[in-house]
Length: 276
Image (tube, rainbow, N blue to C red; front, side, top):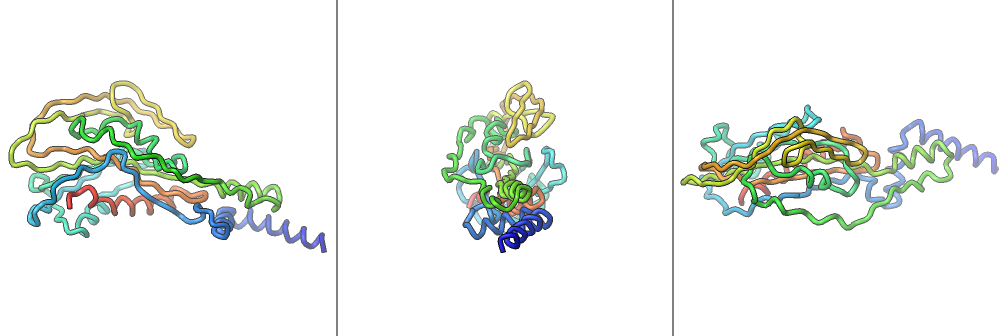
């Protein structure tokens, strides 16, 4: 009887290894109420949107653009951003000179970050927001998350060495984040004079100032050279800087699993940036 039980345990360990430790770990996590068993996602405003006066109905026109300077060059959120604005009653125009508001977005980073960080560690290292008025909202940070997390590696204990290691690894939470800089430009009938931050960088993962920046998070490193300055200019569009980190996590989450959740979150927050 004992030998039969050991055979069953060994067989279970073999099945766990060969059929996917991730699925097994997530199933065990659901039973034990591990919060990483199911995918989670959210957003962090490291520089929050400005509080603007709501526009008249005939002024709810917006021009939206998107650029990607991250290493994940295949990500294009133009369609999601524009559709989200349309769904909330905004008219998206193709001529920027005909818009009451202009929302310019730039993906700076997409990659794996420390679990529960929400990507804020990297976002806080990126310095000023290019194209935004200097000194506006750049010091605002979101408080750190207070909830704790656990790996749940004990779920594989007793199932055999190989299966135990596999399940422990598959039980480790992995988190991904996309960090986007937005410049929300608000139309004024009279020209406004302001200082605007400008930069020239070889990569999107750079901080303000002149020199070389190197950032590391969750075992990855990101490098790039940048030079920056502020200039005094006049315009009928005053630029507010916004920085958003959208994140997703789960046990052993892959990039392919995380990206749709992150894109959905980004779409949902578009109208939190536009005045209501």
